[in-house]
Length: 334
Ligand code: BYC
Image (cartoon, rainbow, N blue to C red; front, side):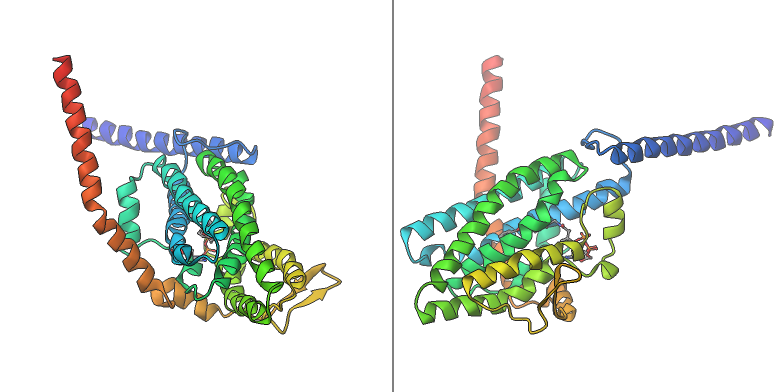
């Protein structure tokens, strides 16, 4: 009886000790965040920090890979060799961004296969913006100008995020994104300085991409479930609403320069706040798209899943070749 009691006491002590240990690890972790130190993959981190990073980084990686599809659709139809080369380079960059981000995610103990499986099974999200169709060449301009423009505003603060591999990946990604944004703006500029028809194409593209680009930066802060904790952990350095306002303030003068009109009758400069006021965003549309009911969700997913399935023989052949090489190496040693 007394032996049993001492065992129980030992177990309770162990639990108390481990709780205390975790508490002190948490305190050390929080202090490191407060000092703006980078957290590296082998450092201790709370499980929720690890999970929320896997969530955001993998969604980001999936967005890059799915984001290749609406533009890839136009590579063969680019109007000149110069435009084709630039678009091809942009789409290749996006594949690269996806790969850095998947690699950064893997440092948190999840495999690439698991990440792909989450995407292909529909469990993981990717950015709502890529569920809209690209119906004219002007859409290549609007995507580069607006979508990459919004992406830069979102990603520059992420260069300073607290998780080292994510922050470092973002530095390179942002450099490439600024080329993407400029090639989009250049397409728009060319169209706006062209014929009436070309200018009308540019206006039509702005009309269709403006609101989805605002939605891309996530729900309003009051509806954003992750912002508060992600700001505390310095995963996010700006809230969704701050990013959206920055995007609008930066982009409206660019539309003025192009001579096209932002499709928002409530848009006006507010002298007092020093920002643009803007109209109501259709959040019902946003959530429908996020839930899989956007104009191209099914098309995007099936293109992605088909590419994965059709590429199986390449992966199998590469594995068989690697195994054969390994075997030959062993044979030589023996
Ligand atoms: N689409 O609490 P919230 C690119 C989800 S690709 C779909 O505010 P958070 C490019 C959100 O996931 C760049 N879902 O979330 C590529 C959450 O659901 P879960 C893409 C969205 O994470 C090719 C729920 O709504 N950029 O540039 O604090 C060609 C509540 O939201 C969206 C990134 O991925 C959305 N738009 O903030 C051209 C940047 N928004 O996860 C260009 C990294 C929200 O609980 N990510 N949701 O099921 C971020 O900065 C943040 O994750 C967000 C959202 C600002 C997007």
